[in-house]
Length: 167
Image 1 (cartoon, rainbow, N blue to C red):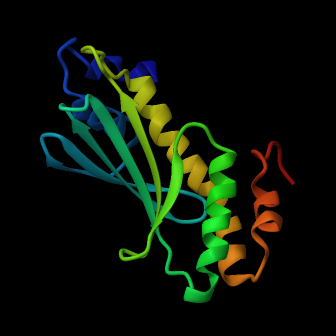
Image 2: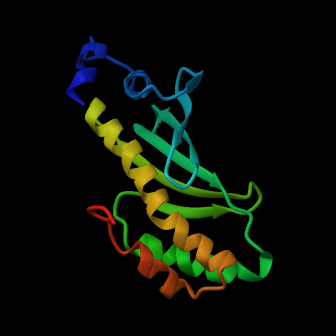
């Protein structure tokens, strides 16, 4: 990510400016919604993910929300919640929740920048990459639970770790 260093000219840069530089570096479509908020879409293997990053100066937190559509059948909600709990037990750098009213599966993470800490482009890049990787990793398991009538523990077995190599 060192290639983004030339975008960052000042130590006094706004965290959303750094996010914008990372999005530009990756050639992701983004929209600066406000001074403290940016939205983008990142293509994954399974689907497109909508990401919103927002800076909260009061809390000194750069918040990331990565979402994808999920409208589960009502009778399968308890199995979805169990799958979410099992998935969250396997990750340390964010977590899933389901926003039923919006019909969205959500990955949330907050980067604390207390004490005038500055977000580095590498941190922002990792933050976004981890969100998309987490969604990609668990998306098939959530699908199996909801529409494949698979038990959550069995469905989560396919999301145990990253796949290396090629088949």
